[in-house]
Amino acid sequence: MTEQLKSQFTERIIELQQRISSIHKDFAGGRHADWSEQAGERENDEVLNALESEAKVEIQHLANAITRMGNGSYGICQTCGEEISQQRLQVQPAAEKCIQCAD
Ligand SMILES: [Zn+2]
Image 1: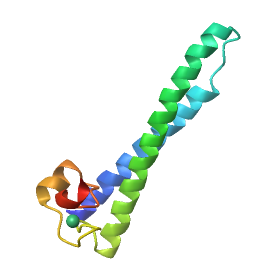
Image 2: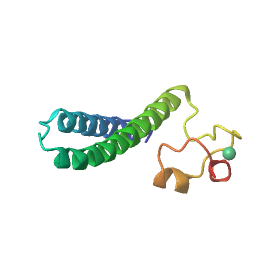
Image 3: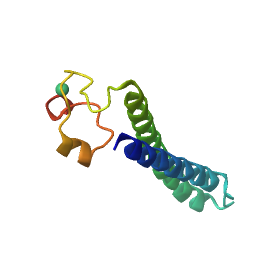
């Protein structure tokens, strides 16, 4: 069960890393000389930046979850030390806190 989750998380991390590198490719892509088009591209850059930080946060969560699987603290609330419910873990497998502490 844990092994299966671990490989799921690892696959997801790889997926997210691929997303980040394709975002970087977009950034590196040619810039238009036209000023009016550059304004639109800057907006687009902001969206890409947001997507990238989102992906990085998720990678961090997943990596933490894998570490916790290794040291046996996976599924235990980091705040109160209670077990995180199975339902919650199903929805949010990388959850670090129980529903009471997560708020
Ligand atoms: Zn808790």
